[in-house]
Length: 310
Image: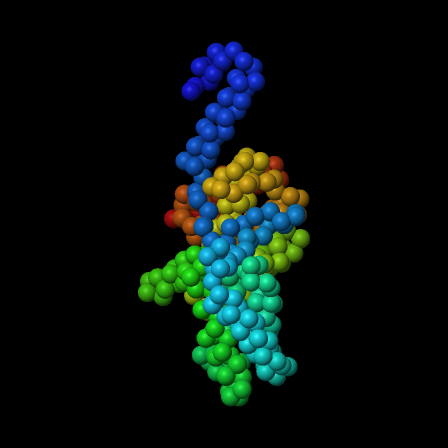
């Protein structure tokens, strides 16, 4: 029903309700046509005044699965044992074990299975190396056993969750594909550095993810980085582009808070190259949306062309 037709509705309440419903539907359709989709994993949400990644909690089916709950308790015990074995002698291993311990300590229904998966896989390169670094001493048998126990239990708990399975699938494709260009990796890493430093604007879970990626060579971590960054950029752009107060692609869009706005303005030189890694269409949409921020109007023209994908 068009606006002209709606105007003939006699009852004022019905007329206005019908008009608003039509406008909402039209705007949603317009948003779908012009707005790139966010990544389906590591969605970015508002948490207070900061941007945060949504947790990948167990599904209802997983909550009803007794084996998963048993594995959770076993992994909780083994993670604590690994942290004790690492002690003060193996600082890198101890830091990663403590991160896993923090993730697995929650009640089962509150577990973030994607972050738990990343924390587990973050230990795998140390297991393969068998020591803290190339020049370090080999791990003693008790550490090797504790590390192996954690890596044996972790996948049984996390695999089967939709987000985790999608991440693993992407990582497997990545291993069989051409190497990612160094410039693209550098752009993503620069954005990671900006996110880690943005304590007032960026939530704790997102910064923990970025810190994990920063020290890792695991394929899943790189895929998580790329998904999270797309969603951070997407979330910024839809707010800057005038969709605040609406639901776009299933995400309720709020205004950019003062801390987030300050962070965006300060980090444009890191955000634009990262946006370019998602292709020209995404880059142009993101840059156009940033240009609508009053704090950036008239200042972007000089650098947009420099970072635009060829």
